[in-house]
Length: 447
Ligand SMILES: O=P(O)(O)OC[C@H](O)CO
Image (cartoon, rainbow, N blue to C red; front, side):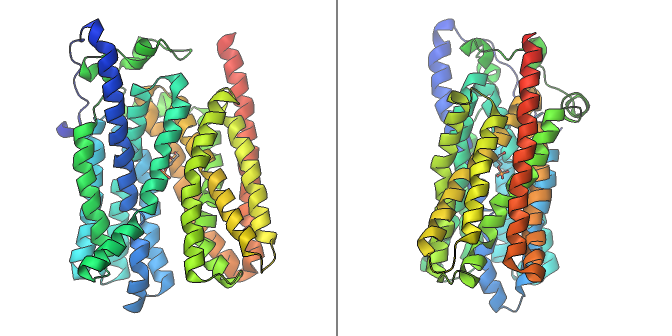
């Protein structure tokens, strides 16, 4: 382990009188650090697509640029898992800003060095490297949340934090417009979000902390008197990579179920999002500004949807993440059927479907991450979430671009929708299995 990433040493405990005020202040401060820190990761994950129309003008084909772009998802899928295991043994205060700065540096190179955008292979490699550094974002946030918020609070905190995706995902076009206004240069799509990300990385470093014990505080379980059923002293010991994989990840059947379900949740998340501009233009005859609005509304409808899902998961479904996921995925699959079958000439219905799907899909996306955090001890939480991300990105996101794309080429949009709706049904099936296993596991713990 690199020295700079080493977990922060535990400090002597502060006086009892100071525990509550310090915990309260640090939880706010740290939350802001991980929220804006992760939002900034999306600045340098979603911005390359904005430069693509200008690269097409330089002579690159859409297909080749799509291939270059896939470098981010492929690398991110592997990295979220592998760097997740490094993150579980690292100080998130250093780990998250380091990954963000490195990803931003790649975008600065692409923005300022002409050679970096001179061929598809070079762009693929650079985007792959950027995707790899992107994998240093989620796991430290996961590690932070499980160390600073107790089990009962996690549904709410993870759902609020998860809105960082949508906040960050919506900003690159605005930064690009600002850059165009200042510099009249399309490469602003690459370097403006990168500058923004570096600024946020510095702020995140100032706000974040490692564990409560490294700030002289008791563990969150003691502070909130909220212990997981199998909690013991070992929960506070850092684990080796071998222990994480062999004891807590690979033998964990529930984790496998949700990782597989994540393939199909991501197939819908990215299948609908990535293809909406093309589908709405080609089939529903939307103009560019209308389909851009549909895209924007899909992302931002995810914010209230995620919050509602987190609340329902804690209060209505009493912490049963599988059951909540089934509820949301059934509805999102129905909305996708309506989106597909709605005849041409009803743009209001198409727009409403995009909003409803965006509203519903980010809840299950969040729940799977949350569930993964809960299925492993907190010292293995990042790896557990990374494991689901590996399946979501390598399976779901890549299938959303490649399999849906080729299916539409050969069988038309009916074929593309059949894949996405089939994916929705499979996600529901796997989440039902998760729900049943979860109930059984809880009964065993009580017995
Ligand atoms: O890796 P992301 O950015 O797709 O985020 C994943 C969600 O937070 C659920 O794990």
